[in-house]
Structure formats: C-alpha cells, structure tokens
Length: 265
Image (cartoon, rainbow, N blue to C red; front, top):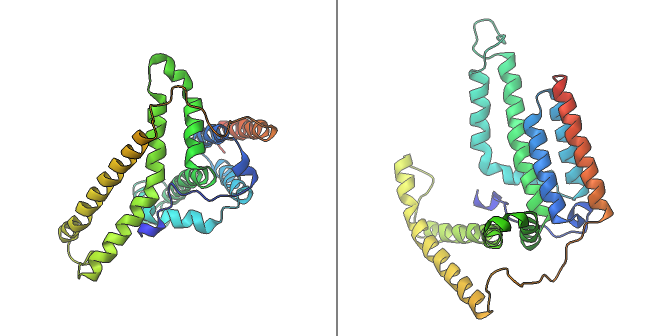
C-alpha cells in the first residue's frame, strides 16, 4: 500500500504539459478545481472528465499511474459512495428499498469529483519538479511580501515536504519489512492491537526524520543559506505562447462549465 502513494513524485519528460510555466499550471489547477466544484450535471462532469483525459494524454501520464495513487484513498471513496447511496431521498430503485436512483446518481458524481480532484493534483506534481513548483508558488505569492508574509520560507517548506514524501514512504516500507522479518504482524488482530504494532515503526521513523532534518539544516548552513533575499535562480521563468494558449483554453473551459451549470447540465 505504501508503494502506491505517488504524491510528490515527478516524472521527467518533454511534453507540452511539462514545458508549461509552473505558474501557469498552478493557476490552471485552481481553475480546474473551481470548475469541478461548480459542475452540477452529467454534461458538466463529462466536460471535466474529458479535459482531465486530454491533459493526461498530452502529459504522457498513464491511467495506471493515476489509479495507483488512488489506492490509498479507496476507503474514503467507497465510504462516500455508500453514504450518498443510502442517505439520498428520491425514487426507490425497487419499491420498499432505501436505495434511490437519485442516490446512485449522486454517488457516481461524488466519486467522480473525488477521483478527478486527486487526479488533477497528481498531474501537477507528476509534470512539475519540486524546485519549479516552489519557484512558481513564490512568484505567485510575491505580492504578499508587502504585508510581511514570509513567502520564501513558506514555499521552501512546501517544497521540502513534497521532496521528502517519497523518501519517508520508502523509509517506512524498509522499517516495516525489517519488523516483519523479526516476526511483527501488522495485518491481523483487532484495531487496537494493530495500532500498538505500529509503535515499533513510528519510533525509528521519527528518529530518522529528525536526523534527516538536522543534516539538511547543517547542509544549508554550510552553504551560507540566509533566506530568499538577494538570491537568484539558475532557470528564469518566462511565459511563452503555449502558456497564453493554455490560459485562454482554461478560461473557455471554466466559462463552459458555468454555462452548463446555468442550464442545469
């Protein structure tokens, strides 16, 4: 299960999606989320799904990578589906049943919403390196510096968090394998027993995380790191024609969703 968590991973490539400016992709992600939560009917969800598939094709991201990342969220998806099926009033599927056609439709829409929300987030991290993502966030949040918001420090922390998610997952998997080799059982027994069995994992994981953080702090200090003031970037971000086209397509996509929403579609 841990190996299925792909958040924070970056797949290098030279596709139209990879070449977009990170600021463009962040803004378009916000546009996509607004459109997704504004969708009300099947036509709206169909349009959002079509856009997601188009971006996956352009970015050379296979459905296997997306579904692999969805596995850890399977419990939440199933629970959401069941709650909407059994607690939505309407026309019963069979006379006397509590399951309604409206509940089934609502359940499918909620599943689509969760899956597409996670998928669009994965598409951003899959096609944007952590450094580029940090630089893009910092550029977009630059106006907040006027009110003394520590923008550089915030984006640096987000970058480090994304960077070390795969590392911590790999470290956890190694510790679990070592504990299983010593006879530890994490899959059987009651919920309390399984929770107690996680203690031998959490202690060395916390120790390893603190040690890694201390080593990173020492490395930054030894390189005379003093924050974002006066720092330059090796790669300067510039908006290209492809970014302008992407902004236009994003605006048209959002407008189309609002039009469909107006007509209840």
